[in-house]
Image 1 (cartoon, helix red, strand yellow):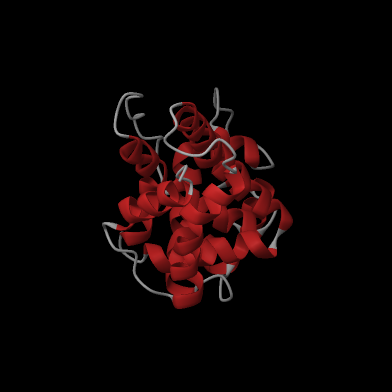
Image 2 (cartoon, rainbow, N blue to C red):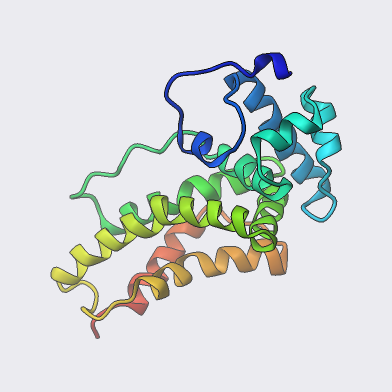
Length: 208
């Protein structure tokens, strides 16, 4: 697979997070798919880079040139299942739909196949490894926290939520129940969950 380490133009956010020489998209995807399968079948505690390398037809040495740690690979593998960023919801759409659109991609990934087990493993990897945690927090900030801050600021100006709203509290109210289900309870995430979470956030931040 080292023969696939060829220069490629541009590069996405995941490419920026990794180390080592650039490589072909096919080779990268093979490793990410193998890592996601490994998380699904063995979880983070049983995660084996040796098995990932074997299933991806890659060398272990090559994988460690591309990712700083097994945890970084695990987190990237989970984030890769989110695919491209969803089309933004119109600014004049219902605020509940706009907020739900921020968390729905992850919930869809969690509900697909063995996604819950794989994402549980990725979250544990992010907690165990500082750089993997930084990768996850970077995604979370860019994809959820920053856009949520903009939406809530708009709603505060309209009087829909109180003016002393707190972004950290809002994100904890929105994602805390998801983490609880995935990690503590190891339970399913219902299809209607995103709407229910949004309703609870807006209720908690309401003016009166």
